[in-house]
Image 1 (cartoon, rainbow over the protein chains, first blue to last red):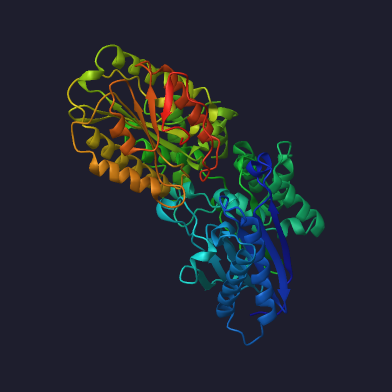
Image 2 (spheres, rainbow over the protein chains, first blue to last red; image 1 turned 30 degrees about the horizontal axis):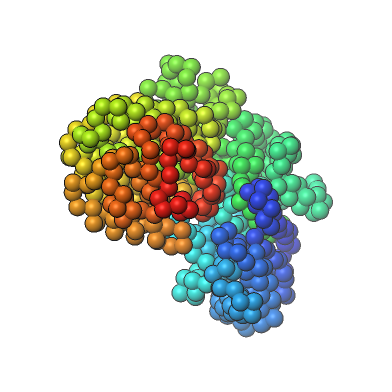
Length: 374
Length: 235
């Protein structure tokens, strides 16, 4: 582990729209603490159907981080200590349920915990949240796998036990890490992106906003940066989207020429997927970020930062779900392929544009695919 | 490149909404319809009309329109998939005809296979999904063995805390009450063979489900005057 790094830390657990409407409190919890040169963060998502899940998630994050902090020494086996912290959190939940004559199921919660020194990270993970990281080379990586039950409809909670918990270390050097509950995960890591690109499902504009904050931190006070992030995550109906795009622009200008950055931001602004997605989340939202501001992250190519081709993604998804409505099976085959070179992409877009122009003004063509015309 | 993409996106907000469909939770609903000989005449005409109106009703609700996939399976002597899972807005006009026996067991098994396969596909594509519905309408007693269908309904409805299936059995005069009660906790008896009101109730139920969380079990609306639940208080 390295010498003490300059870490910018933030974290929120915000009540979701569905819970606001039903007057149910936010069932997520998070905690950030520090021991020596290590940041210890925990995030828990109380299971919606469990009556005492808010209490469960609160106990989980507090006990896990406290246990780790109190028992840590330089000689500690970090992974073992994380496992013990999870076990202690579960024990305390059992005790609380027993003392209050509630079932353990009524306290169901997930739990994630990360121990980060500014480069290396060890973690524990249980449930349907996720940890994603930004490597020094500029890649966004999904570090954990979502743990869901049969047919992916139910979450596997903390009480599933140590055989299910994922306790591990990340072998890459990480300039930043982000812990997310499922409500946030679904928009930052979108499975539909795998229909379009190989590798992972991380939506780069949103991941950049939360993990690659150095560009913003240069120009704003820490308090302002945190306030901006919180306003964006809250995403009220009247949220000013230009605030988000100004921040994203500052981030992109670290890696791209001003002209390229401006072009990409205009494109993303037009689809407005980052802001629309954030406003459409109805679940509670928890996001915790740790950013090592000492690291100079390597630049990637222009294509890496651009908005994906949502139309191609939609069509690939549509074709999988409704093949009987897509008579011409090759209509979008080139769009669902792996990342292509930029020249080839330009040609493909031009071809698609020609196809679109030949269709009627209606959004759907005869194959059932979705098109847009100005 | 950028300009091309901008042009294609335009400012069409409804189209943008469509693009978010892969991330929207989906509800797979199978209409499992008895088209045996006893449904001939006014009942099958009413059923066709009600199914076709059902599409229009559901499509009035913008959320339901994005989230509901409908498949139609008919059973008489044989079982036939009339329509594969289709977005409700793309549902085709139906014109069912009635003849033959009542292979209810085979029909139910086909519908269960269909919803399992569908939810697995949603999971594979990263599209969240609700507990699927099978909405069966029948006016008679089965002419085949329903024991495996009965066992599968019970199994699917009891998986986990909230089950993996919601099976509804709607009986039209002439139906076998004991058979339907042995299949499901949710049996609805219609007073006659007019399906307008029950499909109206179904469309409203779809709207309620489609704005809920996937793990919720929301309270549905009151049944129409010409329908009653058997036994009561279980829907």
